[in-house]
Length: 115
Image (cartoon, rainbow, N blue to C red):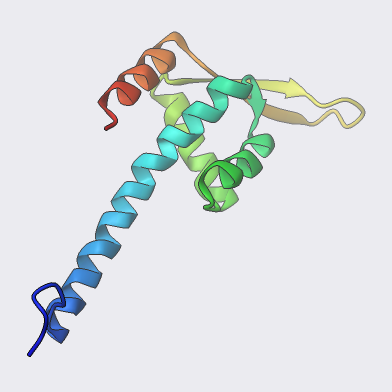
């Protein structure tokens, strides 16, 4: 007989699937929150400086593609300001991100909703 708090094998598999699904949704939402907090604290900050801070804050890693895609989405929605800055000695451009007034209000609203 299975203990009341130990699911049967087929239920355990379903619980595992539910948990995996929840983690994926949570990580997407939490990624936005973590990125906005990093930009608020360190901005304007180059994209390359965000990834290590993100890993330190969350324990998760982001691919460069995922990081840039999320930052561009936030910039396109008016939450982040993107400025291309000349890099000394190379002439290359780097992307610095800062919160806009909309971004600050958005982040404050999200933080008020957190339990």
